[in-house]
Image 1 (cartoon, helix red, strand yellow):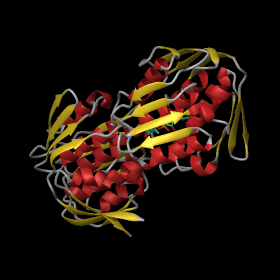
Image 2: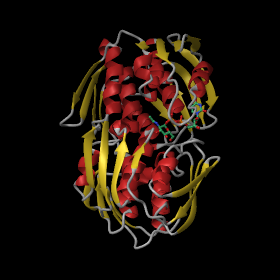
Image 3: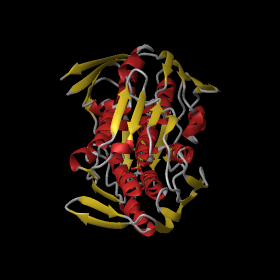
Image 4: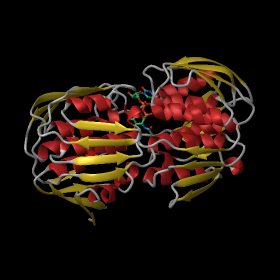
Length: 421
Ligand code: UD1
């Protein structure tokens, strides 16, 4: 299993290009299965999750060609014939559960494994299933699989998501666009990934009203055409590197090809730490302040502070002078990174869904390990700010969600070495 050996502290200076978004790509790759023709998507990152998703799509019978040099995927959905996503693939990645909406939405039948456990607490799919039932889809559970069946046309209806869920909104959109006479999703997720999916579906011919709002009204169309789509940049990668630029003393980072508007209230919060941020179109420059100020945040659904950036933020706050808090109101126990940061010298204490941070504490290298994607990248941030050498174990999590991480960071002055353990 690969690990990183990281030497710190190193100021980060230079330019990092932002890759295409993983979480935005997966829904549109699933949407491609609804089309009657070939769909091509550019700005697709070379990530393990994308390769896994390609395999899920191939198992169904679709043809997938990933031109890695061009970051371009071509999906031919016309050969799909096997309407089942097996446990082996779904357990590797929760987003494979999007196959449920895509298959039942296009073919009227699907058998998809329940996603199973995950590293940061229970992540149910009850809303996906109840929403589909409200639409008129017949749902049953059998030996860990969800079996969905739908008539050619469904009456539809109305379903309120409580809480608002990205995954459930995506699955209900995929299931309804070709099937439901009229289906209304209330309290729908408004995350940029969902907005992009709605736009793509509309480009393919779908009828969706209320895009970008929390009420989506979907009316059935008879077919969806192929399309050429450019995927959004990765907002979480952008936010992670913005934190790196603010956190590590002496840093001056320029991030190109990103979209800070997709980060909700994040950028303004980062300004409050004293970080100097200049935005010009898709170029964002972040300069570290002489001394970071402690700025507490609460992760909320979009446009609130993204839960996928709270671990990185708490890591940065170990270097701010004073006490602060990070609360996660989306996922209540997403704090597996905390004991590892404590091993590096941080003073952090978890109470319910809040971590209390006392700064500033010097960080010193140690061996650390993490159990999920965002926790892992937080340990990389901490290691770049720490004295001496830090070993970050189990970096396969990072390969799921950060394209060429060590290449990008080493190009701006970091010292990351990948070693096969
Ligand atoms: C997606 C993102 C993930 C991000 C999360 C929140 C992908 C592949 N993953 O995950 O990186 O952290 O959004 O922005 O895009 N819930 C239920 N029942 C359900 C579904 C969700 O109670 O059926 C709850 C969850 O427990 C959570 C909240 O809804 O408290 C939001 O979760 P959701 O938006 O569904 O997250 P994901 O789509 O799984």
